[in-house]
Image (tube, rainbow, N blue to C red):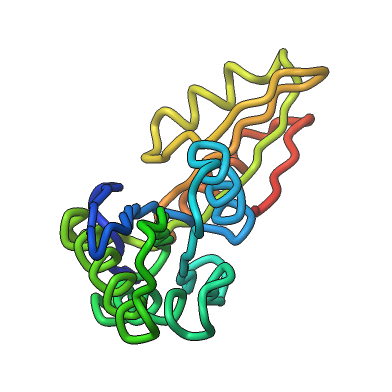
Length: 200
């Protein structure tokens, strides 16, 4: 059974030094697109922030890691945040640190400590959870065949991610990787003429 470590809950921390405030925030993320949207939202929520530095690690559905100093001296913000994620052995996680400058320059070592501590406090407040790897599908059927699909899905264990109702009905779901073969077999047995399945 494939599994991974991630944060238990999303959280926020506050680290103050020499008048500057560093707000650490953690988020569960499963794609780079999702991570970028969260950063954009943070700027909308904190338009007066001096910097919003961050790091994220994705290894389950996308294989990548990113970090950003957002204008701070190179290596003083994004990397210390990333190192805290790696130290906790976490994945599918974004940690952002929102800085409000307090008027006193911290210097390179001071910045590294501030971003490291803000990230560490946020991660500690989040806790850790071991999760099973899941796979995601988008299923599209006609409105007439929607009840048959939903009756079949309700006999399985799945998480609903999204639904779209237009000319057809589309549901995006996530299921445990180990249940994928059973899930596909159930879909095949339904023999729905309008069913389109896409792994996402």
